[in-house]
Amino acid sequence: MPYKNLSLPKLANRPFFYTSFAQTIDGKVYINKKGYWPIASKTDYETFTYLRSYADVIIDGKNTAIRFAKYTIDTIHSDEFKKLREKNGKVGTPKYLVLTKHPDETLTKILENPYEYNPTIFQKEISELVEYLKGKNAKAVFVDGGPHVIASLLRAKLLDEFFITISPRIFGNTENLAITMVEGLLLEPDEVKLELLSTEIVENELYLRYKVIY
Ligand SMILES: NC(=O)c1ccc[n+]([C@@H]2O[C@H](COP(=O)([O-])OP(=O)(O)OC[C@H]3O[C@@H](n4cnc5c(N)ncnc54)[C@H](OP(=O)(O)O)[C@@H]3O)[C@@H](O)[C@H]2O)c1
Image (tube, rainbow, N blue to C red; front, side):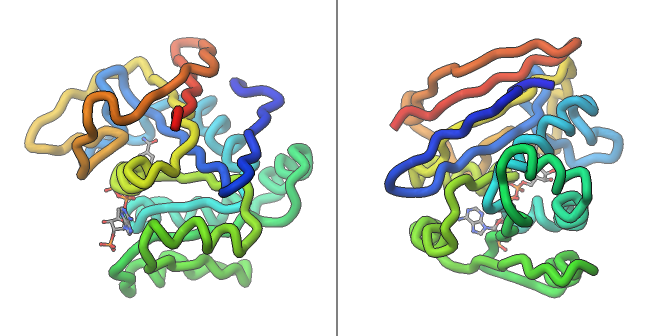
């Protein structure tokens, strides 16, 4: 598996924010049609779980939460995940934060769980997120996504690293069915500066780690 013996930077003034995306070689992270998920391999899913095991807090936008919160909550309570965390020197279960300005019954129902675990529905502005997370003593914050949340965090200069899996697939697009890793925002051509930290090939996939330069 890639990113063996991962070491995440500790920032002095705020938590470290990182994300992981699986995408096709034509840059698609989701197609709103049956049969297009998952995008990448089992190794990518294991890598995603491994990366999340380093988090103090996991953040989802409402749309990603509606699709995946049940799996996320089950995963972070699994024995396998707990063992992984212990091995990585992390204590306890990560907090789970869902960003939404419009919480509704669908979301509340999806967040119900048998673990006496209380995800947080965060309704404030992104500008208030850092202080909130500092108050929770969060050092490493994994952002699941999705692309609208990634856009907000980039604009707020809060995203520090991208872990990207390139899956050897091409989906194309029609009728706006496809989305890419950043949606709802057109960045200036050189607004985000990136440094390539590592590349790894596993079978037919490429694993890229990029740091955002601020
Ligand atoms: N390929 C991958 O690795 C990958 C990874 C993650 C997600 N995805 C895919 O991405 C899709 C969802 O992406 P998405 O972009 O539609 O939704 P999203 O980013 O998960 O959620 C967006 C929603 O979050 C809420 N929100 C609250 N504060 C926000 C803020 N500051 N910035 C942005 N959003 C905020 C808004 O809902 P309210 O109107 O309720 O406020 C907004 O509509 C899913 O289908 C998932 O499968 C793919």
